[in-house]
Image 1 (cartoon, rainbow over the protein chains, first blue to last red):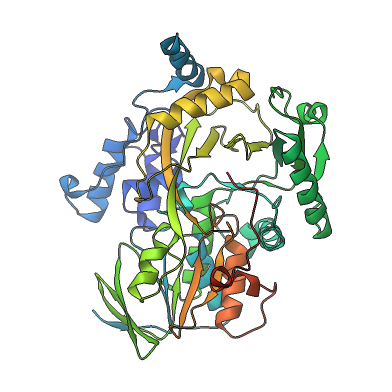
Image 2 (tube, one colour):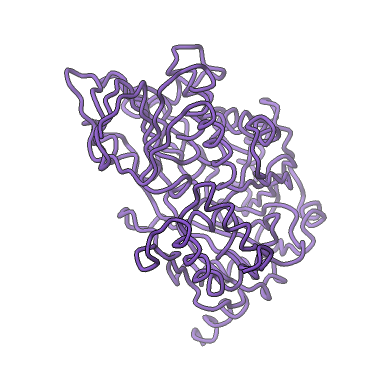
Length: 93
Length: 382
């Protein structure tokens, strides 16, 4: 993959950025998320997580199935504050 | 593998990292920080990222002011190659009753006497700062322009990387399982990666501080309570300042990245260390915030998370030694404000441990105030 290839489309993070951070000792998805914002955007890691885990595996030599993926947090899909707030009003009627 | 250390700091959050950095800067060698997961993985990394100086007790005001002044130059002082994302957009606090309005007046008088130039605002003045604000449920406001936001991960990493350059060792993914005390003195710290022989231990374990204290045979009057947060996807600037209400039980701020972060607490939480996210919070938060800031109805929630407040009876931290166990120090019970107090915690604890006179007299924050009943209650907490 080209160094400038975007891995995280939410925060414009390239494969080069990922490799640099892994080199600096951030060797888990959760740590990379905190230094680079990968997995914090609207896609919540759906795009970047498999690519990042593969890159960690290649650089650390740890098989991908032994790596800890990022923690999934709700909501599953983005939802507007208005939709959540209104939902309950309807249920109350 | 066994090691020896001059001091072991338990907890790699903002407090532990800042204490380690300050001790190393004062020349202490052989400092080890033990962290169960990774840097800022606990309460620090799940906090709301706001920093304020508008407090209701003298100690909290002084510690917050000292910390805020440090944040202003932290990137340079700590020679950080990233950015701690410090933004001073101010905090707008809303009073919902005449009683709270009076409390704010007292707080402002105290803050002003300590060099924090907060001021009372009318609702119209509040709307000038936040034009989208619905003021229906409120009577007045308080505002200080130097409060704001800070990135918890990068701020903590700024401290930890500076500490590492000064020789501090961070043992990540290492859990403390016991603290050995003999004849009333600290002897060693037992971890799942070996034993560390030491005569000094700092408990900076955030939401786990009561369990760490218990390992040394010490009961401390703190408990941990889940507080939840959500963030929206990044949007164009719409909210320049933090909006917060103590009686309304919420805070809401747009961070520099564009996401809008908001949170609230629930005093009915079971005290079981749970940090999962709940639907109930999402529902209450959405209703509260769309009523207060109606245009946010369109903002898309992308993530919720939770962290632990380590709460003391008076909502002020415990900073000081434990007399029953020689060599044991506490930097615990920050009651939801450990991140924003981090720089002062680092300086003051390092001074205390080195036997120096502390820059601020923090004797009022000792562990023994609770037994004596010498409590000054902090009224301003969400």
